[in-house]
Image (tube, rainbow, N blue to C red):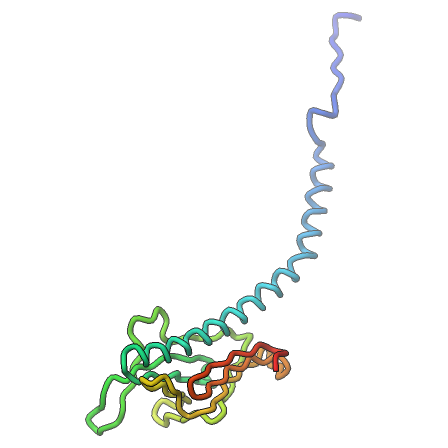
Length: 179
C-alpha cells in the first residue's frame, strides 16, 4: 500500500473553526464587560473638559477686557444650559448698552452637555431682554457684581458641583469635593 500517500495534519497549520468561534466569543464577552467602565470615564472626562473650558472662557473675557480696554460680559442662561462671551459694541437708538458675541473667539456661545446643569449664578446681574444672567468685566480687570459664584451640577447631584467664584480680580475654580 505504498501507492496511496497518507497525509497527517499538523496542529501548526491553523485553528479549527470551532476554536476561532470560542476565542472570538470570549473576546466579545470581555469587551462587553469593560465597555461601561470606558463609557463612564469618557462621560466624566467630557464634563470635566466642559468645566475647564468654561473657566478658561471666563478668564479670556477678563483678559480681553483688560487688553482691549473694552467691557466684556459672561452671559449665563440656566434654562437653555449655555453661556457665552459678549463684547460691548456701543449704544442702540434708545441709549441702551449693546453686547454682541465676542469676535475672534472660536465658539462664543457654548452649549453644555446634557449631563451637567448650569445653575442660577449667585449675585449676578440680569438682562431682562435676553433673559440671561451676566457678570461684567471692566478694562481694569475687575468684575461686577462681586463676589459672584457660577455653579454647575453634574447629573442633578448637588454633591457633585463645580464652582467658579468671581471676586474682584480673582477667579477661583473648584471641582466637586474641594472646599
